[in-house]
Amino acid sequence: MRFGKAGRVVTAVAALGVSALALSACTGDIAANEDVDCTEYEEYGTFDGAEVTIGGTILDLEADRLVESWSDFAQCTGINIEYQGSSEFEAQIAVLAEGGNAPDIGIVPQPGLLARLAEGGWLIPASAEVEANVDEWWSEDWKQYGTYDGTFYAAPLMASIKGYVWYSPTQFEENGWEIPQTLDELTALTEEIAASGEKPWCVGLESGDATGWPATDWIEDWVLRLHGPEVYDQWVTHEIPFNDPRIVEAFDAVGEYIKNDDYVNGGIGDVSTLVTEAFQTAGLPILDGECSLHHQASFYETFWNAEGGDDVVVASDGDVFGFLTPPATAGDPLSVTGGGEFPVAFRDAEEVETVRAFLSSDTWANNRVSLGGVISANTGVDPENASSELLVQSIEILQDPETTFRFDGSDLMPGAVGADSFWRGVVAWVTGQSTQETVDAIESSWPSS
Image (cartoon, rainbow, N blue to C red; front, side, top):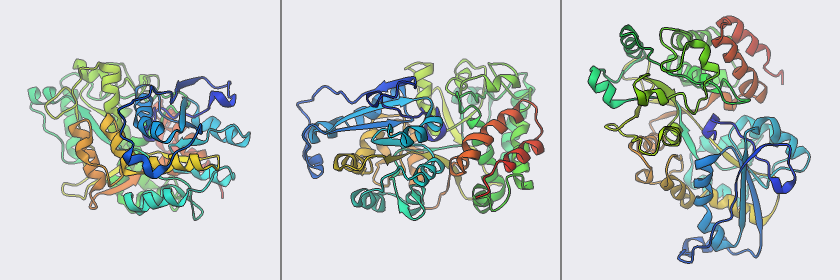
């Protein structure tokens, strides 16, 4: 799954004949539940035999939960919803759309990709019902992420907060380690752990065709914390070049951690293993005491259970927990990066917009959050519905008007950069290329228009 960037999957629907893609399918065939109370779904009407296909970036356990989140809606409205996911999203969705083979709804994980699809003329603008939900339940910033050239195309779906540093509360307590409050304190903690003879950080950048994206999350966090939201925005929109000295500084600061054989790759190997270790499994050495720190988003909670076992407890007094990458200076305003998905429509039909209206509602958001593993920036979500202390905290952060939130930078950049040269660039950088050569190459790839 992707959750922002994770797992970068495209949706192709087998029923539409897209056999070239290896699909991981999770269909909407749900056994009828005779006890469903359809009262809260009456506003959506009923449909006789209507079918809606959805493709997205979500696989495995999270795909099962996604299907469950709309099962009552589907039963009450009579809309048969079929979901399928693939691991080739960025590479294939535009091709599918151009060939008329896209699913009815595609859960797009990048505003930059949404813009590309809209520019191609393949997307259906969102209905008034979808827009009304967004105006009620989401901030103007989130609405803009689903807008291209003045036209509103898609509501946000789920969300994530990037920049958590996962750790073992027990290990911290046993060693007397404190949660760092500044970047300097994070460096000091890293040095202290390394001095004990252990490699403090475990990192995995492998993600199929999207290998490298976890390193871009590091860079984005450090740009925001070192230089603030204005510089971050200028970087993402190319008002300053990708090779600006402030971006170089962020790269070098991150490189002090993930290009250092003394600091990575705990429980896995040396720096060379960063590009071969799957992001899904990279944090697991923490459970065995072989690693102490893992930089990954809120959505990583799912992988502790999916990969580490069902008995892993995510809590401040549990097996694993997370603290946010600290600010550069103590007392700086809370600034976080994050991601989300946007259900775009490729077919203009009442049943398609009815499904999209439901997915943009507070009802759906609470349904999905209650099933566990994810969060939403929908302001109608009750944080207490979240499945862990960390996710409750994450929703409260997103709902706090004092939080400075910035969408994942590479997801906002043009696809040629954010989903291509930036990913490839950080892989080359981790494996030995200099910072200056890396940022210069990425800058040269930026589209001229």
